[in-house]
Every structure is written in C-alpha cells, then in structure tokens.
Image (cartoon, rainbow, N blue to C red; front, top):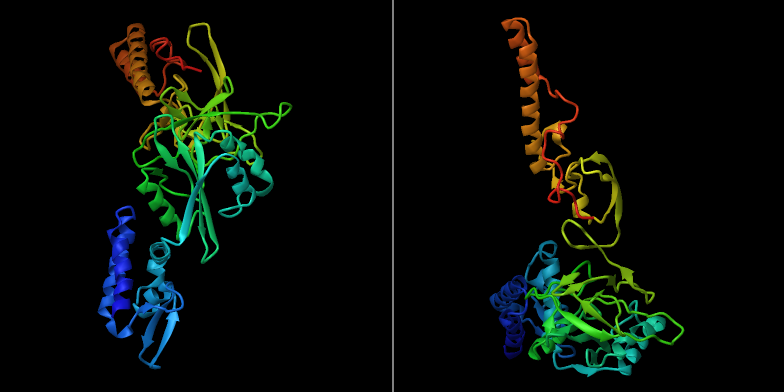
Length: 411
C-alpha cells in the first residue's frame, strides 16, 4: 500500500500546485480519488520505470504494466473523448513531478548561446543549425539576455529558453523549446522560484504577448553588424519581438506595439535575419501583418481640400463586413441591422445630423410649395408630398455643419 500512496501523493502535489490551471488541478484530484476507490486494482508504479504503472487484472489473475493515460481511461473508466486533453496535461505534470530532480538546469550567456543554437539544444527550430548566426544579438548582450538549458540524462531530453532582463529590472522567461512536454512544468517551477515572469503560453506568438500582470516591458539592447560590410541582422524573437529604429548602435525591444514612450517600427519575425515593418491598425491599435489601400469618393467639405483617397491600415477584425467607413467623417463604425439603407454609409453621429438636415430640407421645400400654391387644397397636398418623399434635395451636406478640424480625419 505504500507504493500506491506514492501515486496518490504525486497527484495531490499536482492538485496543491497553484501555478497549474484549476481544471487540471481538479482533474488530478478526481483521478486520485478514483485510485483510492479501486484498491483491488493495486495501481502502483512499475519497478523498472516510475512512469509505467502496474495494475491487477481480476479476469486473468495477473499484473500488467501500462501508461498513466491507459490506467485513467481503461481501468478507472474516464471517457477518452471527454478527457483526452486533460489526460495529456496530467501525464506531463505527473512526469514533471517524478523527474523534477533529473532535469539538470544550467544558465549560460555570451558565445555559449550561439553554441546552443548551433547544436540545436532543445530541438530544431528556425534559429538552429545554419541560422544560428542570426542569434548573435543575444551573445552581444550578456547583461540583457541569457539562456536556460535543461538536460535529462535518463531520457536524453534537452530544453532551452531565453531569459530577458528588462529595463525596469524584471526578469522574464521566454518561450520554452520544445513547447510541450513534461519539462515545461520543471522549467517554469525553476523560473518562478527565482522570481522570473513566465509567459502565459509557449506557442507561436500571434500579436502582443500579455503577461499575467499585463505590464508592457522593454529591453534596450546593443545592435552590431556581423561584419562591417553587411547589414544588421536580427533573430526571430518570440516575446520581445517589436523594435524601434537603431540609434547610436542601440534599439529598444518590447512585448507590445505600444508602451510607455515606445512605438514599434519593426517586428522581429523573420527567419532570414531581417526586420519586418510594423503595420498598426488605425482603429484598434493592434499590430497587423499587411496593409490595405482604400479609395474614397471625392467629398467637397467647402474648405477647398479634395479628399480623394488615403491609405488605411486595418486589422482583420476592423475589416469585417459589418464595419464600414463613414462617407462624411471617414470614421470606422459598425453597421447595426436596424440602420436605414440610404444612411448605411454614415456613422451614428453623421446619421443623426443627416436626419436633422433631411427634415429641415423637407420642411423648407414644403413651405416654398405652400406659398406658391394658388389654393388651400393645393398647398396642403404640396406640403404632404414634400414630407413624404425620401429626398427633396440631392445634396443635404450643405445644410449640415461644415467640416472643421473636429471632422477632418487625421491622415
């Protein structure tokens, strides 16, 4: 029974770890209870391998060894279709708990980082092998960047992750390679014990990397050429992937496109040592990978300026079919389903002004028709016709306030 308690104790330890997601902690508790409710199975670690589990089969009267996942689904009865993801995560967490002390973690910097990428420690990626020279930026800034490597002799497992020292004094553990497996929990535990901030996930970056405290951090690094005749080269960066222009051999990196006194000009997302220009959505401020050119019709605001076309940078969300440009003030707005067809290209502010101007124009036209009528019946019919017709004048903008600095868009 002592060895069986060891399995339950490891699951309870996972449950008590508050850095693990609540769903996974709850699932670990359920599995621990299920093992205790089936003592006849005699579930315990195999003597040859702690990550294999032996159990007693009542039909054959023999003991068999299998993995934790099969124990959970076949012997304890958890449906695999429902708990597939949770079983994988729990297996990684259990392996990390068992092999916690077997992963030897070492911190390196300088030229040793180049060697680690050249040798593909932590697995092959876009910056290993022949592309390792692009990571020279890390070697040139040992006071700002170091690398944590992990080695498990029992399984020949290797792992790596960069450590950044930010301008505000914070230290951040970058994306862990490989980005899945039992080593993730071990390296994150090592980082948190030393006060490092950990990424919310270790998958590929899509936009800004938002940490749990939502702080936008910056790192000032020195940038050097590989040789005087070549251009600046940059690595593919996972977290601090937004950069400013190079000034006096230095530039700032950040995990966000906008931060305190920081505006991204470049994105370090190329695998060829290049910088990619950052296009920022004009409407929501998020970074985008491409820009879009839109042409507007000529609008005469009475100020002598011809607004024929302009360049817009829009993200995917702001390019939705129900998002349109106001034909008067060029503002972005969402078209409600109840909007009238003739005003569907007006934002709510201009739509309200359009209605006011339309009613005023109709009323003025009706008064003119009433005054020119020869009889009372003819005047009443003319006034009714003017009110009921959809448009009396072809250009209602002349009745509306002229475009001032409040209405003219900033290009």
